Image (cartoon, rainbow, N blue to C red; front, side, top):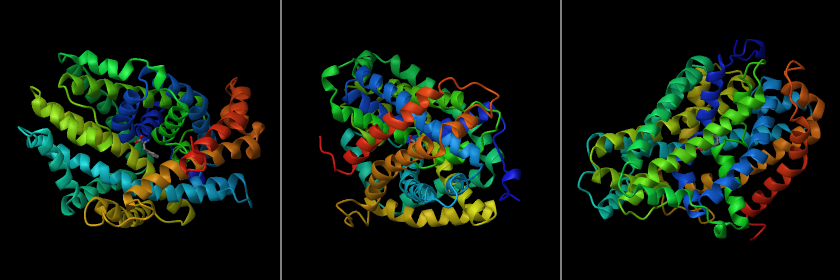
Length: 453
Ligand code: PHE
């Protein structure tokens, strides 16, 4: 029975572990958010800060999550119940499952948009359209209800189908195909972009170090981006960590995942900005970049239809390898805590997330006027997770490991019970005891507006 931890599924190979985990990390955040933030916030200077943050905070939080997951061999809620019986730490698990519901609900909306745009690319739907027409095309699509809902459910369907097929047969198997494909598409797009006349202006937008743009808020921005991008703070990596075989070296896995995630973010910038500048377009951020600027470039480019299809497949794949990891958090919880069968758990999770998802889809159309605290439901889900639940979860996770679970237990897990070395442990413990909690507490307080700088 799948609820029995000893018969639990696990990932089958090192490559599978990395494909699945890096798949969770590499997502929409890498492709449309990171490149733009980098360009706007000091180029190489920002990349440098981001790297320092993922090194000092990202890797330790990730490693803490892996430790909790692999030691407990359980879902995010069960993990804390098992490692800290009778203590309220399981509330981190409750928060994680709640965050998974919320993230999946809004993230899948945008993931669905990528399918509409893939379809439009395939029928050459951007051809001959001006920037204004592309803008109104995007607004009228997101302002309608039927098609965004349809694509939302289709995307959810893909996500559910993979999760239902299990950890090894669904998640690992599919990410082992999707991640290499994602890399291949990215390389194709980079080569095309770099060979455009004027490409170097894009590279200089992206990479030219400008230390004058670095302020305290740059650090906070980089930290927030690192959390969302690395999928840390809500137990995705506790859940995936619980599927990592006992003989795997958790530290090298964490480092590989972080390197992959950062590399994809930087490469995405190298695919996008040379083309943006070569066509003399003002770079936009977020949705505007992916759904207006990019179609605008492709429709002017020779062979644009092909590259446009490649780009939207890339976005859809990046999103899918992330949505499955979020759904898995909920499904693992339902299977192990509520003793449901995986297929039934997947159905229940998918349908219940979709109730919230429908509200998120309609946030750009019929419910656009419906606001809570000045935000649409979509905006509220995004704000609450990115600015509150992930940092708070990350903070509590490192505090749990550093101050409650303790050095010896952690060392046992990280050395695979003494069979491999973990010479980094003193540094790791120091960071998760002091540096990471302080830094995270800072972005958290800033995110909810208590600290104003
Ligand atoms: N890391 C994903 C991205 O960058 C998003 C994500 C966040 C996935 C949290 C899982 C958990 O797009």
